[in-house]
Every structure is written in structure tokens, then in C-alpha cells.
Length: 319
Image (cartoon, rainbow, N blue to C red):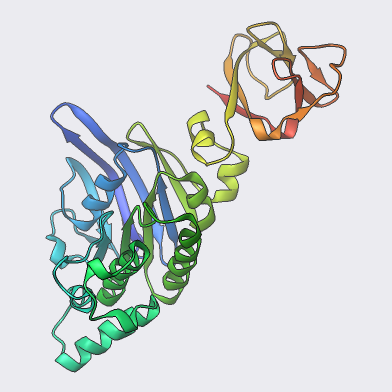
């Protein structure tokens, strides 16, 4: 059964090329007003997921619903979707205004069409540049023009494929603000693909972290920060290096391979786990404390770095 409050609903979506699994039983629901970021390493299938939602490629199996309607086999032009590709998304030999106008849907008079273009351009601060060719615009302006094209479509689903790639760092933060402002001014949902964990954490209502063609965790930035489901999720978030230590449950305590002991979640003897913490959470010691290699007053002693980390900064990955 489909919940019509869900603007995007993916049910067990899989994508295979020959014998390679690109996506493996992806299920995601995105509700009205959400800004969802799809986070993962290059080549993990993020762009393919957007292209399936847009109808540019068909899933091998599974179903895609948009606003309660099964569109799995529906042509792109009949889906209420606007895709901003990783490349410019504007036509190189056309004025920017004409490219933006290609996003306008429906039968409109020329005056109404031009008004729609001007409104979209104004929202991204390009109203005075509509007659310019792409070669006359900066990289940031080209990205804004592509976003304006999506705005002009008034689609309820906006798909942004690495919209901040190859953008200067100072400009990137401004465009992030623009994207959030435009999202809140427009009904529907935004799905934003990136490999940048810090970017995802700044922008998202929820983040879907993809590992090995599956969603490892789909949660709020706060939950990802405090309760990452896997070491891969913790590593993807754009913080400092994640230090991981395999441990085994022995006689009521977790014991590392070199004999260090630490309290943690209850588990049966012989169970395996990984404890992890970010390098930035280590607190250097001026002098090594006695009991090296153990838990010291609520802290884990990292003897290799002569530092400790508070127990509440440790993540546990059990199972």
C-alpha cells in the first residue's frame, strides 16, 4: 500500500548490468518538504538512482511511486520530476534564458512563459543575465542557471546530481544557502546527491548513506552523527579519520586483540564487535597513566597515540 503523503517512494529497487549489482533492493520514502541527501563514494550508484527516479533508466526490479502513482514504466516527460545533472544542464549555444525556458511545462502563452522564466531567474539572482551565453557565465552562475531550469518546471520532485561539484569553496556555501532557500520556497521534495559528508550534514533533513549498492543508514544528521550504523557510515560523514579496533566479548568484558579491556554493550561470550572513534575526539596525555591499555576513569586509552577518548565518544558496531 502506498502512502500518498510520500512524494517519492522506492520499493525494493535493484539495478543490474550484466552480472554486476549497482543497486540492491533500495527502499526509500521521502515526504513532502524533505531535503534528502544521498551520500556515498564515487561509483556507488547515486547518479543511477536519480536517473531511475527521473525515468532515464529502468530498474531491473522494484517499483517507483511519485505522489502515490506508480511511474516505474512511465516515460520521463510524464513524471513530475526535474533533474539537474552534474554537468551544466544548459545548452552551450543558447542564451541562458532559453535554456531555463526548456524547463517550463504545459501549454502557456508566450507572456506567461517569459514570466515563469523571469521568476525562476530572479530566485537565483540571474535575472539580468538571461541574454548571456553559457561561456559568458562563471561556474557558479551556470549551476544556478541549471537550478533555475528545475524551478521553472515547478516539478514536485527536484533531483540534484552533485550540484556543488567543481565550485569554489567560498561560493559553495552561498549556493548551499540558495538551495535551501529555494527548497523552502517551493512545494515538493529535493533529492541531492553528493560524495561530501560535511555537505550532506549541513543541508539534509535526512541522509541516505549508500554502501555497496545498499542503504546502510537513512536518518537525520544528528542520528548519523551520534549513532552511525556501520564504520562506513561514520567514515562517510566528513569528520576526521575514524579509528577502529576489533574486540571480542570474554567473561563480561570486551577485549581487543592485544588484551585491552573496555566496557560496552551486553553480548554473549565469543561475540565480535568493532569499537570506533574519531581522531579529533582524542585528548592527548602529557604523561601515560598507569593501567596502560585499559579503560581509565571512563576513558579509552589509545596507547599508540598516547591519548584518551571519552566513552561517550565511542561508537559500537556489534554483529
